[in-house]
Image 1 (cartoon, rainbow, N blue to C red):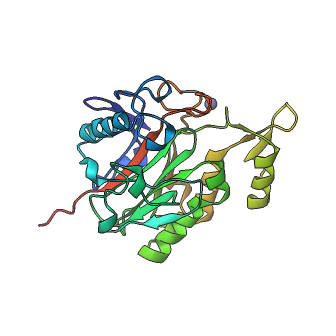
Image 2: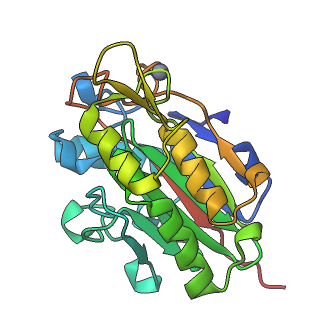
Length: 275
Ligand SMILES: [Zn+2]
């Protein structure tokens, strides 16, 4: 990923998605906001116990720095599902100012409509951005261990194919900062669920020395889901930035011991120029 210094904050962009001038995308950081303590400072999540007024200010700071009007930001009330909602013009701006009108019960948003900035909010879970430049379709996904095991990445690709006529080989993907295989320890329960979902989990769930503990490689698992769905390996960029290792820069729920702000991954199709 490439760090981009903006007026009031820093964001990161994927190298593969940066090649497409017709989209804007970003992953936000903790820098430049007004929230305090575990939400310090650019917390974009309304649902984590921070002061709503501060969250709104943070979102405005991010929106202004990116030059995207805040009423174009569109969110879901994420619940670790594999549900992907299709967003049309009427869905633009849902969840931008208040979590009550965000898309309910959804962890993925997808659209072909310009000027809708699809956003997911994370702190250790994997943010995934998808783009099909041929059919002009974008998606933003939230995939923690549950969403990964429920295969939201596969669901999103198949929805792109079904609803927008995309071809998997045209799709590009970016897997953003999240808890990496260096740190993401899970218990027997997650291991069992992973075996159920994937059959063989070698390389994905790796036992560690301590009995009953495993490393869950959610980067590799999602990479596998995307390539199994037909996306070319060289169209997928894995940021390999671990939030727990770099918790001073990205919110990490684990590093902050369960009370944490959220950073945001967003993607938007720019307005089509009329000639
Ligand atoms: Zn780590």
